[in-house]
Image 1 (tube, rainbow, N blue to C red):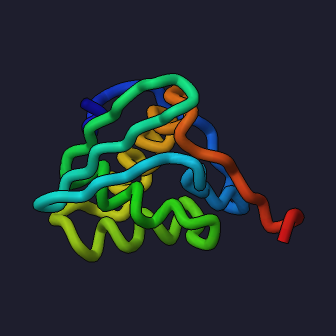
Image 2: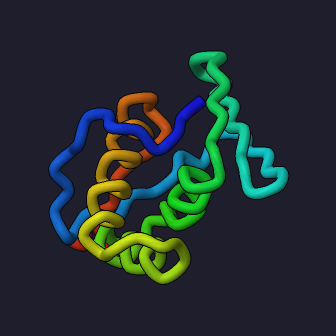
Amino acid sequence: MIAMSSGTQVDASKSDMPARREDLTVQELDGEALIFDADSSDTHRLNTTASFIWRLCDGVHEVESIAAEMAGTYDVSREEAVQHVRRMLGEFREHGLLRVVSQADQ
């Protein structure tokens, strides 16, 4: 299960706009998500907070805007939200679930 944890942080500049890989199969239920990666045959389970961040990994939202959405939805400060988002993006990247689109690519 991929969950909000005290895992590795990644340095994500403000111009990073994380995007979900398009070839993954995603099933959502009760705010959680199951992600199947056919390339690796791995399945990942996201809790509600991780799933919330996952949905905003659309190649449009920057790290800061994902954190702002999280702070507005959950009872966390903006700074806490930034830390959580960066940590979660690190886990997504570690598992190969994201690609990153930078503003220069747009």
